[in-house]
Image (tube, rainbow, N blue to C red; front, side):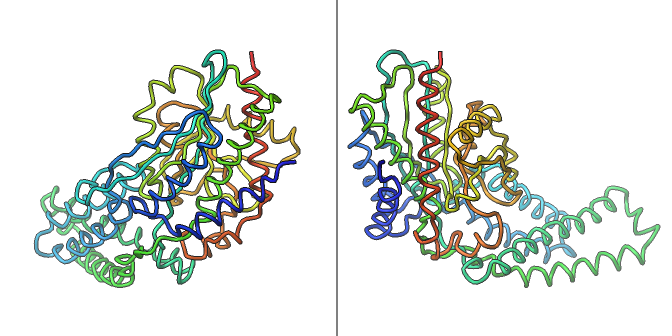
Length: 409
């Protein structure tokens, strides 16, 4: 039996030891892309690197802009309430567009950098009836300072941040309604109105002080990113290696299916790499029945799951594909279950595909709890957090899926 576990762990350790953290748009990210492309060239029919430009500072950098807008809104409320309302409204729109939609809403305010998607491909021997994309991302996040200190502190600060926005909007809404009704609220309940507004103002002021650490949300250091997401890169390469060996040994032959192996850049900057890939290749992907098997953050085989919904971006993935994967996994004796990612949990590279109407899912395998937060997006995201059994399991599922799709008539 192939040493999938050993190969995968060696790959992860090699990238971390030789390159280290790989922030979106950095030289280290580019080095990782080149290393991955060199490895893919050993196995696939052809390999290309597609460069793209983006603005890495915008994603999560928007937190600083929002915080400044909230402070200005608070300070101007008693003097220029209309401007105060506009500022809090703009801050809400920025959070919605940048984080909950992953749109490039204020990206133009930040410097341009270059990232790259690495694409390896196996061509079928007969006709291109199906396309299977096996994907992950090779960049790693900037360290989340609050998570590095304490997961509890991180969750409290995030919660207080959203509470601050909500209360500031409510306070401004009181003013707007009163203004629209020509002071009717103040005329009817003057004491209650003034007390309520003043109380809210001081509560918000306190919250702004308490949430000031959000100004320093991420550090300049890029984390090792072993679990998130070199685990995916290692699986992607191991599947390409196995497929290549079986084709050369004539134990399997691709007849009707093109298989892409895609390592995306700039995922940690708001899925920019996968967005660029979908935009560039959409027509090609629509010409055949396409399945996307994305992989993100896998470490624990007991938590192996297939993501069918991402609540942050309100994206639903393909239930048909998820059922195929779960049925196949059961026949292999591998336990896997469907999950939804949490409301403030970020997104995966499957999102741009599903939004474009392409069947996609993400393999995910960590505990959605404080246990994961103790290493997630910190310098503690190291190879020792990965149980190699999960790398083997996902590899086996994907290999079997490719074979079954290719032999379907």
